[in-house]
Length: 314
Image 1 (cartoon, rainbow, N blue to C red):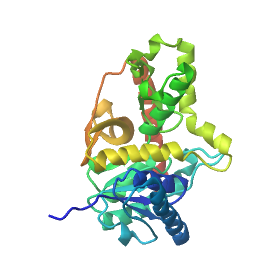
Image 2: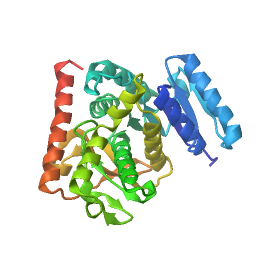
Image 3: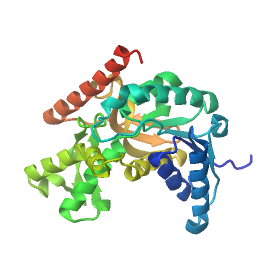
């Protein structure tokens, strides 16, 4: 049987999508297709990335397009299309704006790449992943939301900065919905194998937790004209690579829960085992009373977003 390169398609050639395409190409994860409704944007950025390969020494094709036919047979499809966050605009405000965009994208994905693993990035993340799952009709293993990897990365970065250590030695976990109700887990944060709770005073840990919760807002406020894209793109690529290379990584992702953690029918951020087929297992562990209360509050916020979809007829 002839060798077939993997294929990753990215829907939306904005800052997040284009950066994701560059990172995926530079890691030689497969042939990359960058799709956008604006042909010039998609083709121009794809050509620029392709030429970067001659300097950074990566191969493979990078193609820009407006036609979903060019994405056919993708192994992984990433959806970043939609309106980005702006100052004064919360993730929840984006609900009605982006619901139609994601639904339209997923109808096209279902036709062009019916066997793909789909990773949703568009905000509000948990609700958009719910819509994607409904439109795609794929098994839950093949529909995921990117949130926990990014949120955990922010928490890890702040811990490393506080302790003046390499971020490589910081392990952290964030559960729940993507946004202000997310649940950073200090009890499960380790620095070089040492519990964070033994390295910092409770008030300093709480300050880092709060900064992680507002990590996206902090960047939106500083940029003034958009939202984060480097760290989100890196987080997408980590998830996609786990699937494309069957790495069997345990990563926090928004997954459709079917009784795990006492939740059913919602996409919520939890530790997931990712491999060649997408979600292979939701990894459950025991939460203490404080963690459980925070997690349930976050789940309630996700449920409210999904209820809003019904209320708005979306």
